[in-house]
Length: 460
Image (tube, rainbow, N blue to C red; front, side, top):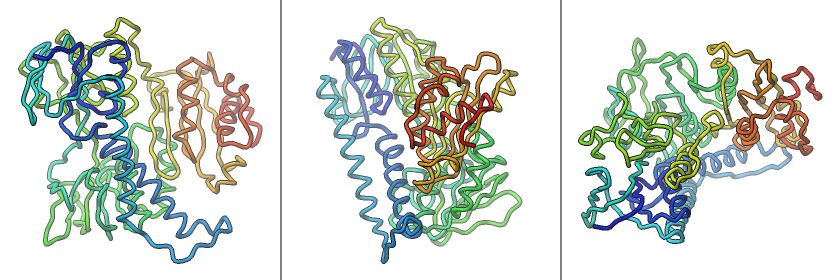
C-alpha cells in the first residue's frame, strides 16, 4: 500500500491549493480527483467559464448599442456563439493544464477515480485502477453540487443547472431562471445580453439574499432596465418538458411557457458516498461536515474544508481554508478570518461585499456609522460610462473600526480587495480616508465613502 503524509480528496480550489501548500511544507502529498481535468467545479464548470461568458456577452452588448455613446460607431455586429463558447473552453483547458503543471512542480501524486475513506489513514480509490492508499492525514475537499427543487424535473438539457447554462448551443428565446442568487443573476445576465428574454423567479421578496438590502434593491432596478424580468415571492411547484417546450408552474399563477429553464436555488455539500456514515463522521442535517477550528472532523486525522463544511460557498474561502489546514498540519498557525472574506457578483454593475451588512449590525445591536458615495460623482466612472451604484462603508460608532464595506458599481470585485485588507488589519475608516488614492481612479470612491463615515465627503 502506497503511503503518504496527506491524501486530499478533491482537486478544486480548496483541494489543489491545500495539496500544493502541504507539498511546499515538505509533506508527501497525493490528491484524488474523479474528473480527468483538475480544478474542480469552479475552474471547469463554475467561476471561470461563467466569467468568460460574462466578459464576452458584455462586449457584445457594448458593440450592439453602447459604443456609440463613446463616438465609436460599429455596423454589422453579429454574434458568433460557437466561437464564444470555444474561447470559454480554451480558457478552462489552459487553466486546468496549469494546475497539472503545479502538481508536477510540487511532486504531488495524482490518482484518478472516486475516493472513499475506509478508515482513519486509509482511502480506497475506485477508478481505472482500483487501489488503496494510506496517509497520516486525510483532507476532504469535495466541493458542492447544485441543489434540487421538488417538482423541477431536471433533464440535463432543456431544464438544467448552471453546468448546462454554460453550453447552450443557441440563445434561448425565453429563459426562466429559478433563483435570484449569484448564479442565477450572473447567467441570466449572460443570456439576456445575447438576446434572450429572461424571467427570474424568486421565492423571497428580494434578490441576492444575504447581501446588503439597500444595494440589492438598487441593483434590481438596474437589472430591470437591462431587460431582466423579476417575479418575487414566487413559489415554484414544478417544471417539466412537454412537447419540446418547458412549462414552469408557480403557486397561484398561470404556468409559464419557455425554451429553457435554469435551476439555481443554491448548492449542497458534496459529502455523500465518501464513507463518512460508516465512520460516524459528524455532519449537519444538510450534509455539511462539522469541523473544529483546525478543520479536523470528529475523527482524528480526517479533515475537511471548502463547500464541504459550513460557511460561504466561495472558491477563495476554500483556498484560505486549504492553506490554513495545511499549515496547521505542519505545526504552524491555523486561522481564517471569516469577516474578511469578500463575496462578488459579476453582473454589470458588479456587486461586492465584505464584513457585516447593515442588517446584521442592527440585529446584533452594534452601534455603527455609515458613509456612502456614488460613482456618479467620480471622474473615472464618468470616463468609463459606468456611473451607476455606490460604495457604502460601515464603521463602529465608538472605535471607527471598519465593520463592513458594500459596493455596487464598476470593478467592484477589484475594489473590494482594499476593504478586505482593511478589515483583516483592523483598520478604521479614518485610515482609508487619510490614505492617498490615485486620481482619477474608481478607488477614490472608496476613499470618499470613508470620508463620508465622518460626514465630510469632499466631492459631493
